[in-house]
Length: 71
Image (cartoon, rainbow, N blue to C red; front, side):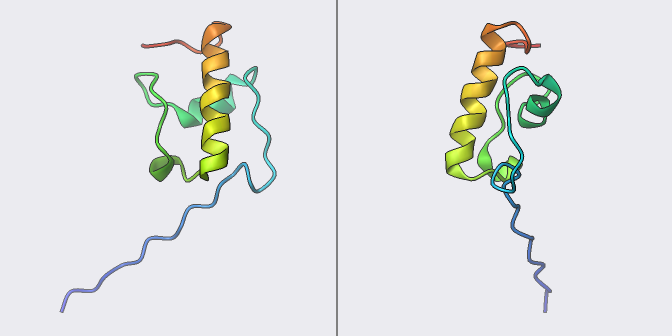
């Protein structure tokens, strides 16, 4: 019989009290891949409410030229 390993459910870091701002590029880089695309919820572990916040902050940082649109 094969053993099934349970993956631990990822905890949303933003629900845990961490704030996200478009001016903080180091924090935003955790939510984009090497091509500059926004990572999905299943990869980052954010909840739906905060995934929308992440997307808005990344888009603001792109418009202010803090983050690149593509690499």
